[in-house]
Image (tube, rainbow, N blue to C red; front, top):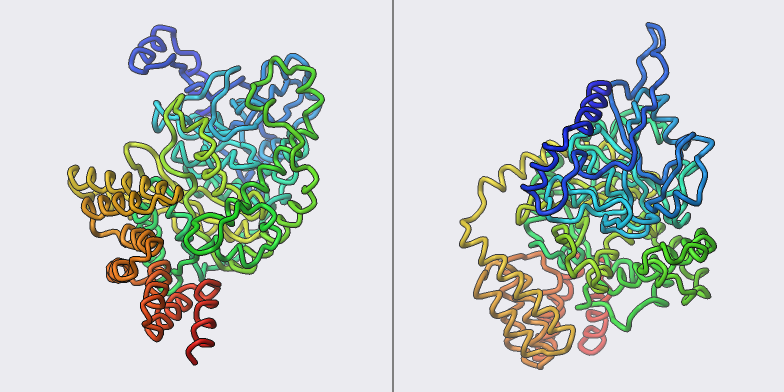
Length: 588
């Protein structure tokens, strides 16, 4: 396949200009036959096959592309910047990982576009143009490894390499609807790759086929093909799914049904990741924004994200500040303006947080656990959308990326169909060093996930119902914003609107109960929590809020029962544990 795919790519890129212009008329932006994925074409051929009876090279018949941060001898590495290319010489050695893949039988056919200096996660580039997302041409492809994701999604190569510091492989994989693997930190050599932030940098790869994803991983990670370890725990991070712009049920239902079918319902459980991290990572207190555990959805992950962004900025500046100062006028203002030395004095605390979060996730997941989170905040933003420059939007997106970036754990992006005609995905995370387990699990579950995606698509509600559900989600999001601004009555009104549009979502009732608690309307809060629990008996926050309401109403035994139930569902929930101890002391 490698030779034919490579030949097809060269034919594709040699299309006449008339065909390109016709494509451009259909799109609302200039079209390129390679979707704008490639910076340059090249051809690195593998060595001859060994003589029988020796096995053929493991990646025989595959072709791949590499992000333009990987050195290839005789070629200038542009690092997403024309100015960088002008001021640097051609590489004298080829990146070790590229040589390994070529020696393993794959053909390297070209270098792909990355965000300028690999700094962003959106996939935009003013120097080489933004690659066109094959799965949603009016949306950004995600970055920094945008071209590699586009090359795979567009069928131009079998797999492609990218770099991932703060989401540079995972995000474009999700936005373009392909598998994307970020291995455990430091398990693959970065030799011959331009560094971004060494404490966070990993080499990752994209593929459409989980078998190809695994073949590449086994070669790069030097893994043996031994017995496959079955997963014994899938932890769905409910608080992470709550901030998604896509209905949480749409994301988790496919995973839950696939896991039940393959491994049984007993391996599924739910976790409030923010609360868990808060109890395990004392260093995060240095980055908290004053929020406390409980109703705050993401205080711990926001703190982790803040620490990650500080480390990213600090190490990027250490690596590249001298060159940026010499070429400042040619570097994007968003990069230059983000390189102050604020917070440098706390870098040692950030490094402590990295160690603590790795230990915390390794303790949770052990050798046979998988953590399930959304890959990104929602559908890929539209080209030139306001979201791309929104501080709050980017901060929430980076919350999700901070888990693997800061812990060094391995993560895979898994496509699960479309929403609003755009690709959506979830991510699986395994402990640091659990790469083979994660690759094996991904291959084992992938076909079942796609089957469940098709089942869900066929059972989709009518367009009218779908519109109501989306309007309800929008009302909920507005209610959440009002709640954050302490506009309790406005939040209640918006949650009520969401319930009228779709009364089958437990979160709407639970959130409205939280607002009623703030107004000391304990009866209504209790009623709403009961409604939420009737819909979803595993909604921990509803038990906590009903317990609080019942305590204020003087129903102490019932309050203890609620807090105890919350503790059964989430054994490490500090709020529930503290409430039980308090009530038992007051009313033994």
